[in-house]
Image (cartoon, rainbow over all chains, first blue to last red; front, top):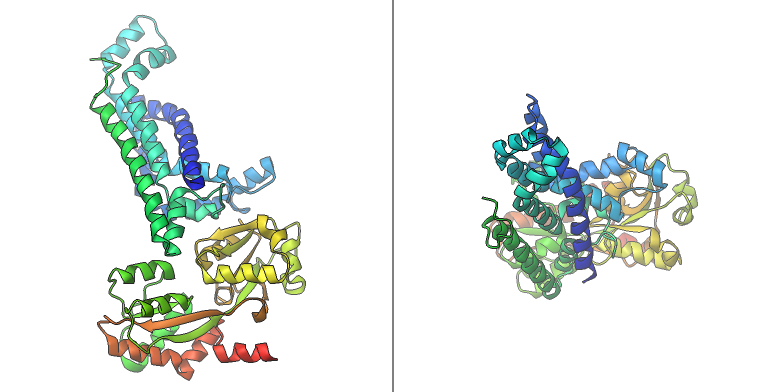
Length: 222
Length: 230
């Protein structure tokens, strides 16, 4: 259960960080007219297609004492980044990045341009338009982004395996714990944890689909 | 084992014309897969317990269980480490410059179990426990040190002599510090190429096969036992 709690904590932190970072990135990608924007969009989507072993391997090397990230972190905090909860958060933010940014882009782009023009004509600046018009209309996208990045981090395995070091209470997440049980041929224990994870994942995804189907519609913005 | 297996297969292929298709992974995973009908002919495991369990489950060809090697472990550091492990031995791990020590997961990896047993025998397990980080298997533990994220590691001799790690510093942990890491092979009952599998196992047992294994840092049951007697 310690591992499950750790995974929830990790997923929660990652989802919160991704909302904060993801919104300006998504805003820019949704509204910029830069011709080479597609390059950045590709970078954002990379973690979708890269195997976690590649991502985890790069993360491990980058976090090492010869890597740029490791050097910076060591200068700031006096210790390495691998095998720490902070290191896991960083790796997971990278890993789940597209799961937060892509739903945000989609919902920002879905906002009727005429409303944005109207807002501008009525004298609202970019920030005011974002908070008063774009964001309220994009709420389902925001919920989707938060929930998907949460769920995706919860189910993360390869990257954590590569940079975590399997420390109880620090980097032993639930997926690693399940893997360890299977390795030790403790199938009963593995099964129990796997079922819990399955139930949570199902519940979380149901929220995403319910929101997008507008099963509950507190924001009837049509 | 990957490197040794590559050379063993190559030699066997040259001798007999039979092609060896090797799949590498953790013994625990393969055990689960074979229990569920994975189509393997021959199983080499760093922990002889898994082949023994296959035998007990009636999934193996009777009489084919063979202890092909004994694994040895070493303390390994990069060449530029501040402490000289070859001179300092165990003391290396207590040094302040060693913040993290990578070992394989002792819960299911035989090399990890041996590492913990040796640390306990040396009387420093409690002192270094907080420094330990766990690789999923011994190769991952090696990766943690090699990438510099851990400053020292207890890895398999067979990895320490590999091209990627040969240039680091190492200290052989005496064999009597832990119970022997017995590695076992077994032919599967449902093997599709049973004759070729048996022939390959014979080749591994031959002088040629043993010389190859030795080259990659493996030892053999008899030799280690003699050492213990001395």
